[in-house]
Image (spheres, rainbow, N blue to C red):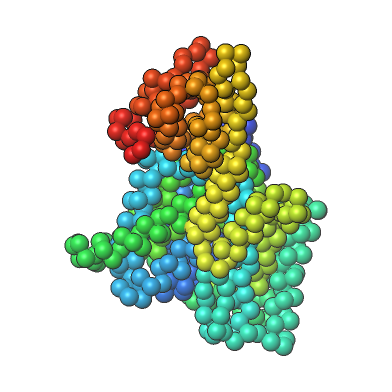
Length: 540
């Protein structure tokens, strides 16, 4: 294999220390077997999410193949797996029901274009603003969602109504079929847990699937199998231009869905990228992942796929099975295509219990159990955010949960900093009163800043020292301008010290009150055009 191709697949040494070379047969075997395990786990997920969206199972399988292949080759994190997901499928339901699958394909194309745009504009870096409590809530909530989604397999085939968060309306297994299902799930989980203690020759999840499937097939056990969900047999994804009219009415229909799908897809993908990065010791790649996800969805929309994003469950299976390079993701996509083209009858014989057992182990490995211990040790706000994000993820969707968590965290942070501002005062030998401002001055603390001063009782000369403060935004500038106006109206002299050069340029009325010093700080103030052009002063 050429060095260029090895580099594309992530199979060469990298500065970060991640080394994987095809000259090592064990590495090649690990990557391929990990990809096979992921492909087996992708089948029921893709079929189930296709049912959720109200489309043919092959629409979900084609999405899993195309998105998985493209993101594996060009995504921001080797080892990450993408495909059709429940988070997106639940949004697609009403679109397909009201307008048909062709509008879904057009929406997926537009969704991809929006994601590529986000990547080009490097918006992926804003995922850094997601605080750790939100990440913990995201992981816990998604683990619960994965668990609930597996419950559909404990219903009689053909009676379950699959949803993005679990099963409803179906007839539950009972008696011997239920006990047999539970026993096979437990067997698979036991194999996955015990096998690594003896050998790593084969990924434990693959061994669990293979042994459980062999027992079911040899003894002819009557248990639900992949084929009971739907046939996965088909051909190559056909090129297909969405059959929708190219007019304004079509845009009005698909744009809202495309924006929501693009946002959910990027949020889930970037959070999964961070999670996989923590496990594998990799960094960066957020903007590249946005472009790869977008390109994959554009292609998928033109080849009859339902669109998708990163899959945390399958990504965890891959990295826990040893997949560390792009080869594992590429092989997973190609194995899935082989299942569709050639091996459908065999794959359809795999018992669902084996795949449920694998996913249950993923749930156990994904859930941040340590977060339960630290809930009583961390600040109340952080604990509240962890629980809140977990609950909203389960009850609604990931994007809503993350947005809510970030907003609550930001408000809590702002309130905490707003209460920190205060001033130490003293009088100089010359009779001037000095206010030494302590703490950040921004929109949350602007009111508190104004209340610190007693204009009527202060002497004729007042000095405000910002050496231990920082002026952060437009509200802070307005508060300084208003303070200057009050002292000016009272006929008193006000001096402002240790403000940055940026403040010098932005303050209009109070600008002439500044005292230059060699130790003035150097920072920029976040303001809008009105302040930068001098159009916003005191009283405006």
